[in-house]
Length: 161
Length: 136
Image 1: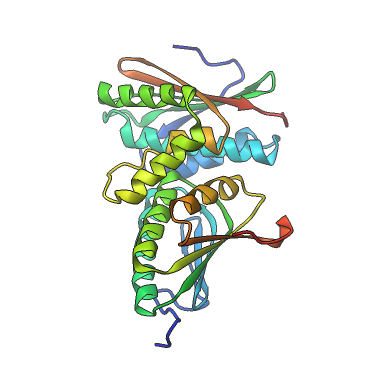
Image 2: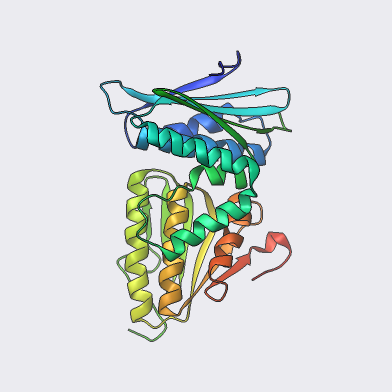
């Protein structure tokens, strides 16, 4: 499990649905001096990861579902989400998706997933968040799982920093 | 009801806000969306709105319905799913959805071209004039 960079800004995401909006504002403030493209990408990543934390984090008495960090270093912006997951199967599924994205054309993966949803409107989960981060946001994703903690890291160039 | 026109729960010219999302029926056959869509509450209301709107479009036998998203700066993936479902229903019902997009918004530029590929005869994309012309 990698450690947080020294300059990372971190948000502890509260256990409530409206917290995604908190995450969006956090993202906008964290990269306010970056290019519009970079700001859009980071906002997307923080919101998608934040929504996943709220949906899939282990239910417990803890007030927060996990943390999201944003850092900029050496022309790279890095978004890091850490949380405790309920099921190892969910963590395994995320790991497989991320691995698949590292060896495949992400646009084609995104299109294929939209095609599945188009053909099967009753599918319970959209599972588009990580694909959008890679396709629209231009992020490279990696993840690690040391039960019960799942960490997802998304990185991309940040030319405006 | 006049053929080709849509009436719905949202009145013509009335702005409805759900948290940071604003929805307005700007013309009988045009819906304008602006702001951001990220919370579960807004997602639920948005999906319900689109379902109601679909029923009205079918009832009015509208051939082409325009959706102006130029000022819709951010949506989460649940909203993309809602657009996919709407396109699927439109394809089955036989009407066209014409999305007015902004070339300066990354998610418009990238995701709507992929959405169009799902149903090329159902989806039209019209980029705003800032891009120097329209494309479909």
